[in-house]
Image (cartoon, rainbow, N blue to C red):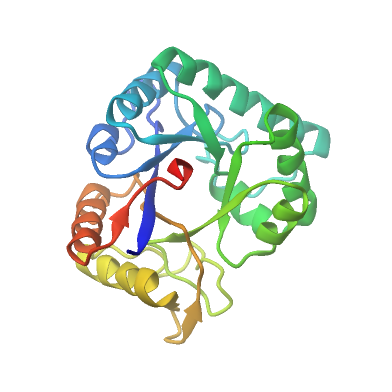
Amino acid sequence: MARIDLNSDLGESFGPWPMGDDMSMLAIVTSANIACGFHAGDPAGVLSALKEAAKRGVSVGAHVGYRDLVGFGRRNMEPTSAELVADTIYQIGALRGLARAAGTAVRYVKPHGALYNTMAHDARQAADVIEGIRAIDPSLVLMALAGAPIVIQARAAGLTVVCEAFADRAYNADGSLVSRRLPGSVIHDPQAIAERMLRLVAEGCITAIDGTDIALEAQSICVHGDTPSAVAVARTLRDTLISQGIELKAFTNG
């Protein structure tokens, strides 16, 4: 039986400013990338998301990012290596403390936004985040963009890497994500998203924005939690995969 993990970026609300519907998403996904306070999230909201994840048996990952609350972590930055290593350790450590209080544990790390995209091809920043992960807990799994150089780099450094595909993002022909600044970068139709992810799981390929097919080997599928249609997309995707006999299970559960 084919099997796949569904993940989403959660815990991103800040004080009175809501972001997404964490409670609904946690009833759908199998893994949750929880904000660590740098790009989004506040301690109370993060703790609430962690408690719900623990209640539902959803695997928890640290969603580390640049120190960029105003830009939601989507602005390119050039922190020094000393800063990025320490920032990675700091964010994981903070989330681990909250996770312990919530009765769960951080099992993996997924960088957020601009840091995620930069790390995919920037060996220096990738090495800094890898060093930070290894310093605090080398058993943590790194979630990375399928087909990107970071996958080989992190595995060579001794980390376990899980590759992911994005359900609601368009791809370039080289396997990179289409910039959010360009039209068509985010896909909103739940049924279209479900059909393209079903093909990915069944055939290992996806259609790029220029119409060409590209091969992707992914063990997890991400549905962004901050789009208006996020819950509908995730629910349609989950129902479609299950209806086709595909098992949904967190990659951290063996």
